[in-house]
Amino acid sequence: MCHDSDIKLSVLVTREEYCEAVAHEKRKSRRHIVPLFNVISAVLIILGFAGLFFGDNISLSPAAAFCLILSGLVAACYDGIFAPVFDKAAAAREFNEKPDLHYATTYTIKDDLIVIKNEWVQGKISISQLTRWSETPTLFIMAVGRELSISIPKRLLTPEQQNKLRQILHTDSGGSKTI
Amino acid sequence: MSEQLLNKAEISIDPTDKEYKDAWLLAERAGGWLRPLPLVVFIAAALLFAGLCSLDWFRHNYSSVFLPLLLCFCCPVLLMVFFFVVPKKIETQASRDYLTYKTLMAKATIKLNADTVVTSTENLTFNDSYALMAGCIETPQLFVLIKDRERILIIPKRCLPTENADNIVKFLRHVFARKRRVMKNWAF
Image (cartoon, rainbow over the protein chains, first blue to last red):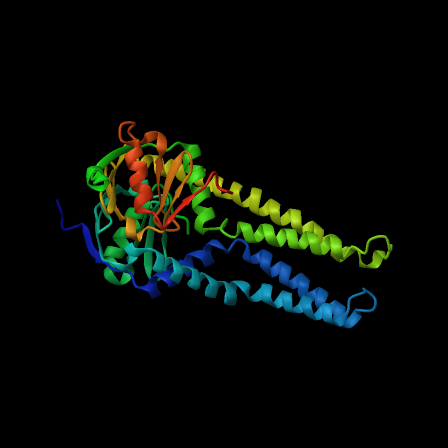
């Protein structure tokens, strides 16, 4: 039975939304190794400059020093420039590979469970069964292991519904939020 | 026809932890991190060959020994990464995912229809078309149907009903004729 307080949505995620959200998730999951990249890049750049100015004393040729500086710059720019491009490309490939993302899915979100209906999956899962959920600027992403993934675009939700969903996820998902 | 006879053949599936891990290794080997394994073996052999060839044997010119040694060293490192480190990582992840799988897919039964496989659990029903699946891997113990990079369907051969096992195996082989791979284990 559907109550007024339930959130009922027919969802079709666009490729752009999906790619952006996945790239955002991956960037956040990478944040703990970003300082390591910064340290490595700093060391490489310092070594490179040392090679350029004092190469004779430390047996480092100008070409090798230049390579070190270049590597340092690549490491410094990896998280900000290269990784988002790779992540979006991987997400686009993933989007193409998942046929269930290309068709509409109906979700009914009740207080403690989500009812799912599309051509491939039908049924309900308890919010407490979620193993992971995250919120990106465009999507709410929820997953139950590898078997089930739910993406809900924020554009389909009113601010009140967004708050309600956030609250449900915070209270009932057993602290499974990863990002 | 055997396909018609097999319509709605029901199998109760209950993969073990080991079967689940094996299935994920097979899936990753077919289309994931372990896919470039043959290429890696070739590159490792080429590195070893290049390293040994450039070792400057018997001329005792030690100034050029570092690069050949580095090339030789890369060979076992590459093999170790792809034969031990990556599979171990996949197994660890699969062990974690198995707990969720076990909860979500408890008392799962699959129905092999002519063009779809329907997986029913207590709360969910998955309906997957064979045509949209990426492939099928057959080992002596398992059928692994690959839905996409994140999802697979594991059918342990021990779960096939004994009276119909041969027909079901024949049916799956027939359905995935072009997309079926036969493997002994995840590596070969």
